[in-house]
Length: 267
Image (tube, rainbow, N blue to C red; front, side):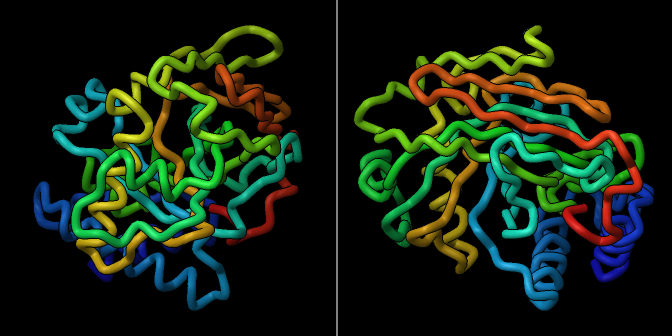
């Protein structure tokens, strides 16, 4: 596990992707992968970063089947990976980036029960925002299994939140349609039902899982509930805009100069 953590951390710091870490971990052992993720999270905290919330991944049945699992995964969000709506993310700050549109819940209450209901999540949610997650892989050519992506903090890179909060009572997240556009052309479409049937279901799964691991969701946390449609490829200079029904829009912009990216930041 220490070897896998070192490979991933070196890739983050140098900007050079590494070989798959599944080759140095027990075959198919998700617990070992999460232990690697925890080691890397502790390193980020020791460097002065702050956890701002959590992301849920693998919420699509098709992606789960592709990676040979039957459950979502999760990773931590950090303060240095939060990008303002429409601000440039330096090209190279996230390795091998792709973008996906998601629903973000911002909590005003703790979720620390052993088992949670949708009502618990609704009660604990202050407001909802549209989000674009910039996923990235420290593993060369996205050559990943579930073990690889979990160890790699669920392939988390950066995230952009919209800035117009909406109350949950004004939304039907299950039927909310999403379109992610590049230069006015759709590159990904979907709806809330693509995320475990409803983004609130993903939040319930995350809340239960984090309690079991001793890191319950707390007031102030942001929860990225999972992709509403397929990931979209991005290139230097791209500007993507996601629109989610009832939530409005959010933009992610990418710098065009690879030299902009400071070594070791947001990788």
